[in-house]
Every structure is written in structure tokens, then in C-alpha cells.
Amino acid sequence: MAIAALACLGYGAVFLTVGMIFRNPIIPVLILLAWESANLFLPRLLKPFSVIWYLQSLIPVPIDRGRIAIIADPPPLAIALPGVLLLAAVLLAIAGWRSRYLEIDYADD
Image (cartoon, one colour):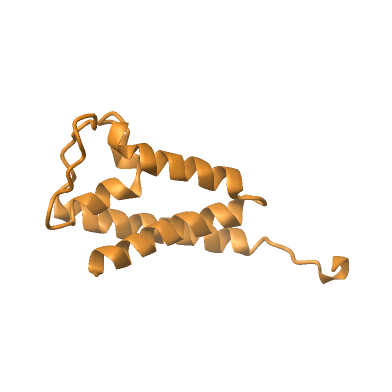
């Protein structure tokens, strides 16, 4: 359950920040979805740029990735847990900073 909570925290921060930065976040969210879905096939240098790579090191039973996947060792627990928390903190700070400069005009409604 803790891994699911960390996944919600990490992905929630990512999608909140994308929603705050872009006026129409459909295209960036589709790009993020494709990036996270293609994590099995990414080279070892690109895997650390996805949330799922950090979460995979926390699961107690390894997932069978098939024969096509590029296998990379997940980070140790001492890096994965603070990595997700630090990512969420940084992205929430960016979203909070961005929300200070938003204007809502109720006259157009």
C-alpha cells in the first residue's frame, strides 16, 4: 500500500505540474504516458528519468518484463525512496510557484 501511495504522490505531482504549466495539458500528458509506458525499452541512461523506475525497486517481488525489455538494475532503496519524495517536493514547489501567477477572469463566463 505504501508503494501505491508513493506512486500517487509521484505521478500526482507530475500531472499537477504539467496541468499548471500548460493551458491544454493533453499533448504533454500523452507524451508522459508514452514515456512511462516505454520504460521497458529505454536505454539504461534514460530509465532514471521516469517515476516507474524508482518505484520498481520498492516492490518486493520483481516483475517479469519479458525477453524484449532492456534490463537495468533499479536503484537501491536508499536512493529510490528519497528520489520519489524529492521529485514530488520539487514539482509541487514549481506548481505552487506557478499558481501564484495565474489569473482567473470571471467576467468572461
